[in-house]
Structure formats: C-alpha cells, structure tokens
Length: 267
Ligand SMILES: Nc1ncnc2c1ncn2[C@@H]1O[C@H](COP(=O)(O)OP(=O)(O)OP(=O)(O)O)[C@@H](O)[C@H]1O
Ligand SMILES: [Mg+2]
Image (cartoon, rainbow, N blue to C red; front, side, top):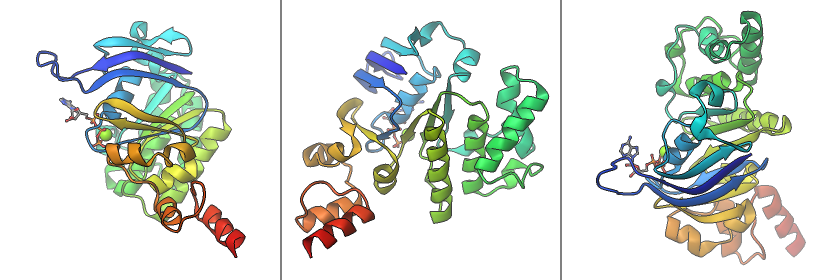
C-alpha cells in the first residue's frame, strides 16, 4: 500500500538538523502502531505520508504512485489523517457540516455526502449531535468527530494521531470498535500512540521510532519482546507484558486473557 524509501526530513533546512533520517518502510494491510518518545518524529512522519510536508530526500509511493506529483485533493481520496488535537481540524459550525465537508470537497453529491457523514457519525456515536456546534462538544467527542470526518471520506488508508488521549474506558472501547470496523473493511489502519496496552490489544504490527530513525519493526508481540530496543527508545512494554515477564512466564504475554491462560496452565 505504501512504500517509503530512503526518507529524510528536517524543518530547519539551513541547520541541517534531521528530524527523520534514512527511513525505509513498507506498509501492507496490517494494522500498524507507531510508538516512540516525545519528539521521536512520529507526527512528522505521518504528515509526510499525507503530503502535508515534503521530503528533503527519498520517495514515498502509495499504491505504486509517487505522491510527489499528487495534489492534496488526490491524496485526500486515498489517505486520511486524524490530528492529535481536534481543534486543528474542526472549522465548521455544525457537526453535520463538519463531517460533510470532506466528501463535498472531493466532489461527492450532496445527498451521498450526507449519507456518508451520517454513517460515519453513527460509527463515532455522534449521530444524535448533527446540529450541535462542534465547539460545544467535549474533548473526547471532538476527537470522535474528527474520526468521523475522516471516515466519511472512505479512504483506503486511515492514520490516527493519539486517538486514545482524553478518552475514558467507554471512549477507548468506541475507538477499538471503529478500528475493528475499518480493519474489517480492508483498510490500512495506522496509529501513533503512547498507550501500549491499546497497542497490544489492537495492532498487528508495531514500529518503534527513536530520534528520527526506525529502531524496531515487526509483529507487535515480537517488538514487545525486544527489551533492549524498548529501553533505548524509552518506551515500556504493556503493563501485563511486564508483569508476566517479572513472574517468569515463558514467551511474551500481550493481554489479560493470555495472562490468565498462562496462570491456568501453571496450576
Ligand atoms: N513545525 C515544526 N517546526 C520545527 N520543528 C518541529 C516542528 N514540528 C515538530 N518539530 C520538531 O521535530 C521533532 C519531531 O517532532 P514530532 O512532532 O514529529 O514528534 P512526535 O514523535 O510526534 O512527538 P510527540 O509524541 O510529542 O507527539 C521534534 O524535535 C520537534 O520539536
Ligand atoms: Mg506527535
């Protein structure tokens, strides 16, 4: 789906301080989490994928086509990005208008745009708020609204930047369902996230960024077994993984269900 070759990027071109360097990555259908400490370059990386920033060196192809020659509108049909801070995204006066904006912007008929918007708002649990001013929503609802805005575009690739921040358990459960629905539709779901328990539960592949480079990449279980790399990147394995490890359980445990199975097996 996405191929990243030899990618490097810096904000301050004159000083040459690289924010990302020598990134080589391929993305297939697997749901993928991008983790790493503050400032590791995660958001910068996904902005490059979305064409909001341009690489200094290297190439990004999506479905075999170099994104360099693509307009923002063309990319908007293929790749959706939900920003970390919903206030960077929201600009309309009603929830419905907000979600219809994207589909209308890619020349969808008004009735079809409305249908897509309402469907996406249902997935986000906000279909009872069509006429509400987005700024009157809570932070967690605003984040769900931004997800609906991107889902209404029906892009093949959807990237979330910190979806679980400001969400309580109910909100996290909703986001889990949204991600599952998108996966079931065959979409590539990617997320930047600091919540490792959520990574373990929902993402097949995990990529660790550290100081602008890819430090580890593989199936989530494998990555959470790489203690040295996690230490270097200053990220911790999920709590349940750490607990199982401290108790000396064999293998890498990723969920409470697996933990209980191990306990039962040891009885
Ligand atoms: N617009 C900008 N102009 C200049 N420097 C920037 C800009 N945005 C980010 N940076 C710098 O680039 C580096 C990578 O930032 P980025 O936001 O990509 O990290 P991140 O991994 O998403 O971090 P976080 O987990 O805190 O969101 C940081 O050193 C940051 O200060
Ligand atoms: Mg970020």
